Image (cartoon, rainbow, N blue to C red; front, side):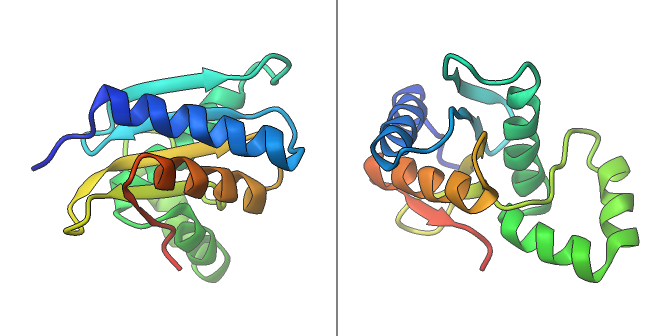
Length: 144
C-alpha cells in the first residue's frame, strides 16, 4: 500500500488553510491522517474552539474507517441513523458524519488517507479539503 508522506500531509494542510483565508472562511482546523488512521498533520488556526481538532479528526477517521467520504456518511446518517449509530461504536474511534472528511487517493485510486476539516460550514470545510488535496497533486474522494 502506498503511503501518504509527511510532506504531502503538510502541503494539504497548508493549502487548505490558504484556500480558507482567500475565501474569507471562519478559522479552521485541518487534520490529515494516513490510511491506517494515524495522524500525519494537524493545524489549528488561531482562534479555533477548544475541541475543533476532535471534530476534524472525526471527519477524517470516519471516512478512512468506513472507506467513504463523510458526505456519504452524512447521507447514511440521514437515511439509516441506527446503522450509523452502530458504526460509531464499531469503528473504535471518532466518527463525525457530516461533509468535510475527504478521502485522499493516488492517481491509481489507492487509498492514502483522509483530510478532515472543521470550523466553517460543512460544505466550506469540504471545499478547503479539496483545495489542499489538489495542491498536493493527489485525488480527492468526497463520497458523492
